[in-house]
Length: 249
Image (cartoon, rainbow, N blue to C red; front, side, top):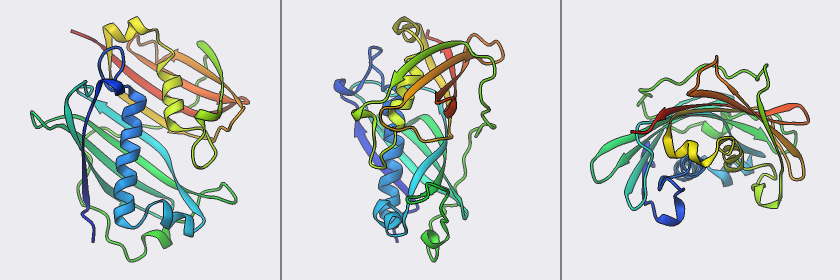
């Protein structure tokens, strides 16, 4: 039986950082997905196993609390474990450690569901987890966050048409493209003076190649440091997010 807590170490080179010499939020989310995928494969609940059942994993909800964004030329270790499983959902948690100092730099909580590849409706996870002991018993220390609701008062808007490089193995838009569209709603100098401390996102609907997205940004309850960003396609929310900033020292 594979370990219930899975770890992967990596070095962050200059080719994978942004203008602030830090890991971009979209790359961080991709790393979380990659580590989750590696563990799922070892547990026997990865892509190949799911496809045999006619279903596929889909990230439904993600919350990240960041005390220090990973930075260039440093090594990190990401740990992940399954917190819970049910017929429709599985919760998975993460912790990223700076390997030089042993200090945690972020924690994340995710909720995954299965999509039936034929109907595109929620799939049944019961046969996937039948007979498997995968829940670690380790919980999540952070705040998972509440429900993200659609934006009512529209603020700043931007438009983008999804291209070939935005499409994933399931033929819908990649998570990384959604995150890039969200973070691009602020100018470069904003990131020079502010850093992200918390990010929440809920995925609601699949977007596809050639569709036009409308990205909407509005302050959350009037806060200058917290904003809600929503990505719509044909007036349907594809994802809803909340992003928290603090002033850099």
